[in-house]
Structure formats: structure tokens, C-alpha cells
Length: 69
Image 1 (cartoon, rainbow, N blue to C red):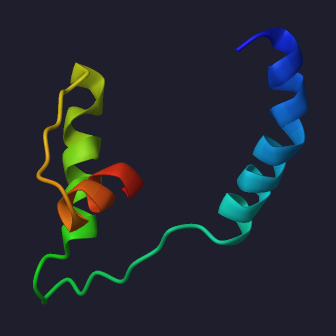
Image 2 (cartoon, rainbow, N blue to C red; image 1 turned 90 degrees about the horizontal axis):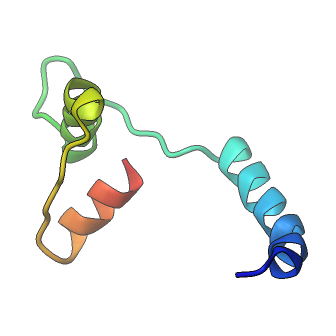
């Protein structure tokens, strides 16, 4: 992508970032309840992000959780 195309996309990226800020991904984790997949993905990231991990998922919902969280 050349520089001109990047500039043309800037308003779109600005809008996406505004929406992400206005509507962040969220979930409620009950400390005494079952572990939610979103929480597991968050924790896995927190514990391994300094190691540049490679994560492999199955297709479907697992892939979506991994991409989003």
C-alpha cells in the first residue's frame, strides 16, 4: 500500500478507533464461577506477551475469542 492509499484510509481508521474506544470489548468474570474463555485468553496474553508466543486455534468461536481478546 503506497502512502497515498494510507492517507485515504486514515478517516476510516480514525472512525474504527473511535468506535473501539466508545464500545470496548467487555465481559463479566465471576470469581467463583466457571472460567470464561475471554478471561482465559486475557490471562494467557498477560502471562506470555513478553515471550512473543505463537498461538494456534481451531476455527470458529475459539478463533474469534483469540482474535478479539
